[in-house]
Structure formats: structure tokens, C-alpha cells
Image 1 (spheres, rainbow, N blue to C red):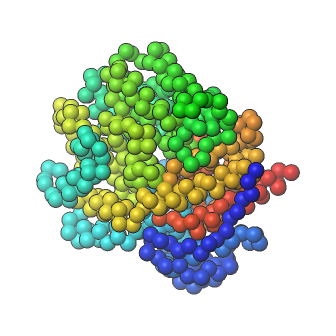
Image 2 (cartoon, helix red, strand yellow):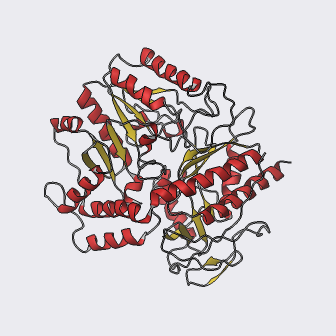
Image 3 (cartoon, rainbow, N blue to C red):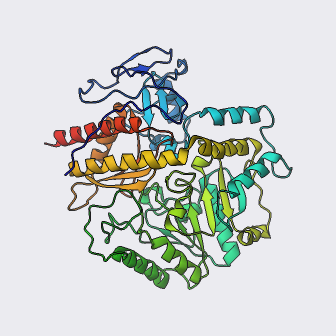
Length: 517
């Protein structure tokens, strides 16, 4: 068992351009710029280090009351908005800067969820903000019935980040829309209809992509996405097979492994399940196979190292194309590579992307080969806002900033450090079952105990989740049973931020365990 060490080492925000100042005990910036408000906790734990400092001063909030916002949320917003609201005591966000968010009361939060893995470079990144302002003064919107330079500049730049033959770009407004179009293209190109995805996957919220999604809370009791089948997710922690050398991650599972060097029995078993799906659930010819390189909503699930390479071969033998859903893993988030699929040494036929593409600006894309793209021309397809001048200016700035700020490298270094330290906490606590991921796409799976691997109950997850928020850190949740904490922060976070989170997470788990006694 390892001893956990969580210490602040005085590291400054290297990539944000924001110099650090000396931290004060539990100090938080108020809207007025004063630095005096203490934590919202009834007590400040003596062993909890100071929140890393930040010299940004948010504006003082003078808007409507929290009570009025909740009243409108209940009366005028669709009930779904209320249903998905995080926390028993919700967070009322007012302003953001890089990895930081402020609520309407002036309390500062370390954002480790980035608007659901979306704000890739940080809130209101100055370089992207400047590029957006320049385009706003020039031209907000026109459509592709006219020719404007920004879409062509961006498509060329985006295509340069993908391997041959993935060089043809179609721009959308969201990941759901991108995946919906990828479904359509796969069927047009192959002449086949059936599509296979993993259990536990999430690929969007349109009626078509709901068929791809295999996660009960996101399923409606109506026909959605006809022609979609699910195969067993090759989850080497929770699934029936797994070992200690299966995945491409700085941290492996706690499960024992008896495989010979270079061989993975779990991979063979899960490929066997895919073959079973081919034999029982789909016709002899299929349209496509969808997979996230690392599952997002499913809880940062990683597959055996060679799984996708073997799966792609089997899919192509049956006339299908292979689609990589990079909505959450793309744009350097996994650290080692710009795209998640590159970690498996495969080249898909279609790549879909969104979220980090615009660091919070609504945008998505489908990138494919010239041959598959040509099949899309069998009818007209018009997208009013896809590839607008403003969207392309934002997205182009994102690509430039990733390179200029060294964001991908930071994701690798800080993410590896975070996972390694989380693995120490896993060894300390019986209820932390697994730590996994690459770069800053990280999942921490919570269990009743390591022997059973049964999911930690929802009420326990909620208690820990709420405590982490109250101590000033925002993370996410995922997994089929809501049993996995998701850590997908802006990729500008520092090791100092990580040390603070580790102390908070340790405190929250320790508090829960104490209360159980």
C-alpha cells in the first residue's frame, strides 16, 4: 500500500499567461475584486491546503437572484433542464477564466469538468477571445451558398491534423449532429444499414444517435436509431475479463493477469464477443462500427491495446466502415496523441468531433475520405450555421493556441501526474476500485469493495460529489451505474491545481469513510 502525498509546490499557471500570487488561507476573489470570502463549508479542514491563487478579478454580479433563476428554471425551462441539474445545492455560475469559475456570490471553483469536456483551452482564453472579437467586427454569419475565406482556411488547417486519406471536412453545430451525419454517410457509402456500437456508449441525443447510445438513462420508450446493435464493451476492470497489462494507460487495473508477454487473453475474449455479435445480431454485411477511443459518458472506459485494430479488420471484412467518435478525446486531450484513435495504431474511415473543437463555442465536424464524402452528394444537404465565419475563426484559433501554448504536452504531463497520484489513493481506500485514462481524460470508478467490484451506491456517490463541490472543485459523473467520477478539465491546469484537487478528493473520501463507521 502506498502512502498518499498531496502537497502544493508553488507551481504557477504555465500556459494561462496568468501569474500566480501568494495564496491566502481559504481566500476567494469576490466580484468586487476584494480577497476576503472564506469557503462555503461550515468549517475549513485544518489539513486542506489553500486553493491555488489566481490574479483574475471577476466582475461583481448584479443580476437576478438565485431564487428567481430557480423559479424561471422550473416554470419556463423544459423540465429536462431541471432533471439534469447537478448537485442538491446547485452551483450558480457567473464568470470564468481559464481553469477557474466564479459563482454569483463570488466563490471560486477549480473546474475539472470543463463544461462536460468542452472548454478545452480554458474559459475565455485570451487568444481565442481576441480572435472571436476580430471576427465579430468583420462578419458574423453567412452560409455555404456563398464563399467566404474562414471556412476554407479552417478546413485546410483541420485536415492537416489528420492522417491520409482523412482529408474531407463537413462542419456541423454539435457532436450529435456530426454522429448523425456519419451514420447517414456510412449507409450511403456501403449500401448497408446495420451499425454496431459498444454497450455503455454515448454518441448523442438526436433520435438517430440515441440508437447508437447504449446507456439506459438516455433511452426513451420509443423507436430510436433503427438498425443499431450493441456488442460487449471490452472493459478490463468491470467486464468479465481483464488483467494488469491490458490497457494503454499510466495506471493498470488491480486485477491479476497470467497472460504471456505480448499476449492479452482479455482482448481475445472480447473480440470473441464481437464475433458473436456478428453471428447473431446483424446481417452478413454491415454499414459501420462506432467507438469512442476512450468512453466519455460511459466512465472513461479503456479497451485492450489491440482491440480496435482487430475489430476494425473484422468490420471491414463485412463491408462496414470504422468511425471514431472523438467528441471528447480529440484535440490533444489524451496527451500522447492529437486524436484518441492514434493510441491504438489504427486509421478510421470517418472521424467525428465537437466539444473541444471550439473550446465552448458550438461546433462539430465530420472528417472522412474523398470516396465516402462523395456518397453524401446523392441528395442536397444544407446546414444554416455549420461552418459559419464566426465558428471557423474560433476553431482556427483553437488549433493555433493548442500548438502555441503546448496544450497537448501539458495534458500528458499533468494528466499522468494526476493519474499516478490517484492510483495511490486507490491503494489507500477500499472504495476506489479503478483509476484509468490517458492525458486529461480520466475516470475514477467507485465500488463497495475491491473484491466484488459492485458499484458504490448513488447516495454515496452524491455525498462525495457534493462534498468535493463544497470544497471548491467541480468534477463530473458517468458510468452505466453512475459509479465513476469523471475528470476532464481545461487542458491548462497545473500540477499545483492537481495537488489541491487530490487533497480535496482525499478529504471527501476520508469523510465518507468516517461517517460510515
